[in-house]
Amino acid sequence: MAAEQPTATVPGDQTRIHNIGYRSYDGPRLGRAYARRSLYSQSLRGAYGLGRSAKSKVLPMLLFVVMCLPAAIMVAVAVATKANDLPVDYTRYAIILQAVISLYVASQAPQSVSRDLRFKTVPLYFSRPIETSDYVRAKYASLASALFILTAAPLLVLYVGALLAKLDFADQTKGFAQGLVSVALLSLLFAGLGLVVASVTPRRGFGIAAVIAVLTITYGAVSTLQAIADVQSSSGAVAWIGLFSPITLIDGVQSAFLGATSAFPGGVGPSNGVGAVYVLVTLGLIAGCYGLLMRRYKKVGL
Image (spheres, one colour):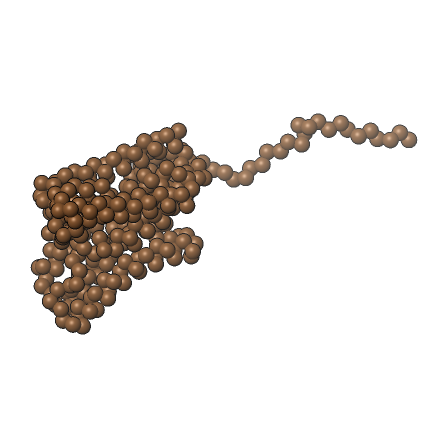
């Protein structure tokens, strides 16, 4: 009996088409505005470690506590001693704690943008219905908002404590409003500088070191030069030297137009004329940071 010959198998006979249930999306397209809001909210949450690991929450929350703790102590002292005024003006608080603010910017600006650069996810953002301007605005606004929360929260503690201590309502409200204007300007300036520096490198460690260098070394150098100029009785040069550091820029603006006491040597801030230059330089830096970020991410997104 002859053996049955096996039937030749054609490779194409093994092909199967499986219906795995993919369906096209027929719902509403939420568009650029929704994508921009989502990117903003997620970046703002990430600036305080929300939605991330527990380790990521430690530093931003610790810095937030460090910012608010001195304000709470001042309020407690003012209430206990029935003082006639707060120990520190609202406009001076952020200047005194500028090292904490600089550390926060140095830690969170690279977190906001360096990971996207390192893992090359920026082009993926731009494959969706958002453009370069949407990405830059969302990142800039989120870090500025996070900084405003960090710097305005202790001012709110001071204000509430001052009212509890039954200090003059009109004076405290005016000082609180001036302080909010000051920290809003500071938040925009520091956020822009931090993001520009951090966007240069995809390495988070390098970004942190670079941001710290820009914010702290410039302040140390400017303060030293101002002290030298003051010792040599060159009081007119003190105000002009202050143009070359972010924190002294804010100090000059608020001492010229917000009634703040200046931290410059001798306690004398810029005049209104020089203060106008401070305002123009500050606004120019903010606009320049936004422009540099736009140019940077137009190249990255290609």
